[in-house]
Image 1 (cartoon, rainbow, N blue to C red):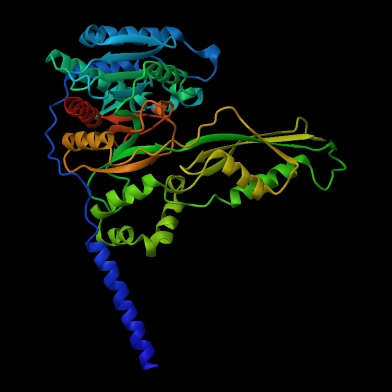
Image 2: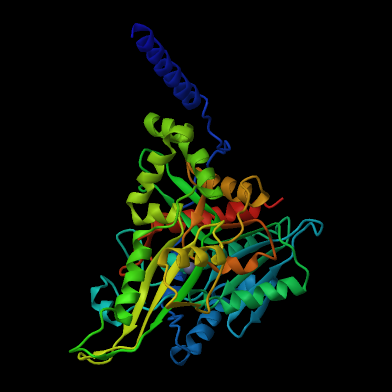
Length: 479
Ligand SMILES: [Zn+2]
């Protein structure tokens, strides 16, 4: 008995020693970069951003609502506001409204970079108009925030890029390598503009050293256990898949219902799918995030991330608690449309549901559809793919020119910044650029933005100041 206790004690001591050694040797992977204080925001830069917000460059998803005059007026505004950029860079109009600019670099031997943003914004729902504190298209500046539809998504990036180019051109600056600016006009509804730009670049045999598009943000609030701000550099984005589930079964009069109807079969399948989430896993960006953020955290969290062999399940469970965390560790599925029945006393013959899935890197659509059939176990349910399918993107390596440059530029722009790889939940235009570069970074240099796609969308003036300074550091340092 005594022997058993002794060996147990020894085992515990060894375990604690291993945990401590792993934790204490879990060293920071952050580049040491000294921040340069950002200059004060110019009143003129703020006015330009405000004016950009007044153009209703809305993607409705219904062609009859598309207002081309807003997009043309917006382009005229850009041309008028940024005369040097339009004099010195070559502008091309692609797919009628998208824009491509070419800025030749000093060294033609170096591969170019592509900076992306999109001009379109999501609509403001009629029913929510009255809930906005300020008019969604007025471009109001109040309480150190810039308010309006499109501030965070994605006019902050678009305007910051133009402001920076204009400033650098006024100093006769020329980038080390060529820079392409690619601005889509319909990102929110699939990105045909971006597809056309990517096709053109491919035809011209352009292979970019890196591409930067919207994506992860800077957060001071959303990382428990971390006292420093962290910039989340998207190194991959989840895939997108919508499926329609259809059941056909003769209906009839509701006074003498069958034991099982089309609606019963369909809802049972949906419940089964919701009750059986796909297996969680740490994708490459998530593993990278633990390595980058872990060593910067308080001791207990650091210990967990330093010892995933022991704490993996605990970390997974913590992530799974919140919808955002859960979406980071698994392919998600949710019913979004359900349709059956036309009259209260008729049992419908057809019942349909649409489910939307966001695919983790590594989970391709065929594999997931096979798993869905396995979970449903009912051949009466016909599964059809709806048109918009995108597999999860490739993962950009952390050890790449793009990651290193973006990381360095944001660290220069803001003191004490931690940078980390990140898996983006949403889709961006850059997913169409996989053939132009294998180094795509998805990052929007703004700090804890509010109201993304929602009511009272806004970014702080500090975010705008940071974004301007970030693009300047990046463009100055493209050797
Ligand atoms: Zn966007």
